[in-house]
Structure formats: C-alpha cells, structure tokens
Image (cartoon, rainbow, N blue to C red; front, side):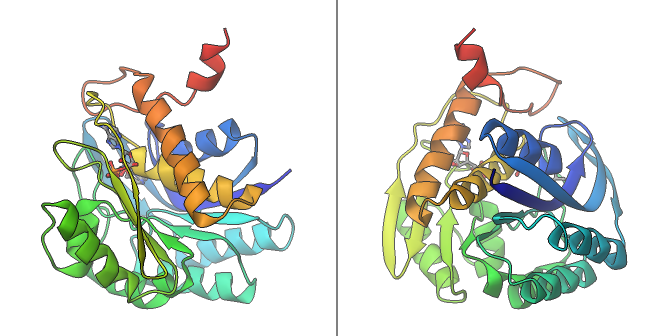
Length: 263
Ligand SMILES: Nc1ncnc2c1ncn2[C@@H]1O[C@H](COP(=O)(O)OP(=O)(O)O)[C@@H](O)[C@H]1O
Ligand SMILES: Cc1ncc(COP(=O)(O)O)c(N)n1
C-alpha cells in the first residue's frame, strides 16, 4: 500500500488541515501519516486560536515517520513558523523525500490569518525550492507575487512569475474567482487549464487542503503531475457537489460521497 504524509495543522472541527488530509488519503485507499505543525481552535465560522508545535517536536515526528514507514508522497499545508519551516526543509533533504506538494496556506476560507510575514519569507527561500508542485489560491498567489489577479490572463502571468522562482510546477487555483472555478497549471513554461464549473455551495472549508492531499495521493500512486491534478480536481469537485451542510459558517466537504453513491 502506498503511504502519504501530511505535514500540516490540526483543524479541531474536522473540515480542513490534517483532518481533511487523512479523510482524503483514506478515501483514495492509501495509508495516511501526519506530522502536526500547529493546533488550531477553529470551526466553520473562523479561526479562534493557534498553538504552534515546537520545531524540535516537528523534527521528532518526521524522524519517527521517515525512519520507520517511508512516505511515497508528502503534502505540506499550514506551517506558520520560520523555525518549523527550516526544520522541515532540512529533514526532507536529509531523507531525500519525493513527490512533495506544497499548499502555501495563509488564510482560512472562513477568514483569519494562518501565516506571518517572516514565515512567508522562510517558505519562499526554504521550502518552495523542494516542491514538485505548489498550489496557491488566488489571494495566496497575490500575496506571494505582490500582484493583483482579476482575469485568466492575470492568472497566467502570475503563475509564470511564481513558476520562474521554483523548480516545480505551480497550480494556481481559481476557486476564488466569481464566475468559474478554473485552475491553471504552469509547468515547464507551458499552461494547462482545468476548467471547473462554479458549484453553488458556500461550504468550501478545506477545499485547498483536500485538493493538495489528493494530488499527493495520485503522485504516490504513480501518475504524473498533470494527471494527478486532473484526478484531484475531480475528487474535490465531487466532494463539493455532494453538499454537506454542517455548522453555521463555511462548512466542510463531503468526503464520503463515493461510498454513499453505492448505498
Ligand atoms: N464553488 C466551487 N465550485 C467548484 N469548485 C470549487 C469551488 N470552490 C473551490 N473550488 C475548487 O476547489 C479547489 C480549491 O480551490 P480554492 O478554493 O481556490 O483554494 P483554497 O481552498 O486554498 O482557498 C480548486 O480546484 C477550485 O477550483
Ligand atoms: C489547520 C488548517 N489548515 C489549513 C486551512 C485552510 O483551509 P482551506 O483548505 O479551506 O484553504 C485551515 N482552515 N486550517
């Protein structure tokens, strides 16, 4: 069985972060492992508190994982501290980790910042160079590139700008566009569009986490980057369409849609 590691923050309400990743990996029929970087007190209405795990403890978790059960792919989500970012980069290099997906989580869809400025710079210099694929949403890409994105042309320009700064591919997610949910992959100086119909559903807590861990799953299985993105987008689209309506704010996705269909 292929193994996928999520290095991310815990979302106690189960919609995003580590919890979304475990659900996604399990629904792909793969073995999920986790290294927790932070505990968040959040729910569908917002992020209320964050308790960051010490860099030493993150390092210990990674040592335990890599020295015993080697992951076939890794997804990195919320990493809000520059020392943690440095430790992760160091460990991934030491263990020669492969198939690395980085979701540069900055703000929860329900609002609330999850990333400091210092951590942003550490991410750019320490972790991004290790990514096989980076998956910013539109606000994250704007923040990282210091540009504004309004149109598909803006998305192409920004993806190329970010793509030139890293070795891997960039998937610029279009979920925050008003009319559609088209995602753009920039890879080896080429653009691939993944058109997506905008589903009328306010419950999109955890879409980015789900997409990035689904990409990691497909890379672990052996698909190439563009096929992994295609399959991951299908997975997340299905989970948004399946409409779970939990909580009073931006609720979680329905990961159980594949099994429910058969009942
Ligand atoms: N309302 C929606 N309808 C269809 N797809 C969506 C919707 N919202 C987000 N997506 C898709 O979910 C994935 C995550 O995108 P996005 O919401 O932009 O990221 P994030 O969760 O990081 O903010 C992308 O594939 C995006 O196109
Ligand atoms: C611990 C944690 N990590 C990530 C997100 C972002 O979630 P989304 O996938 O909605 O962008 C979150 N809200 N909480």
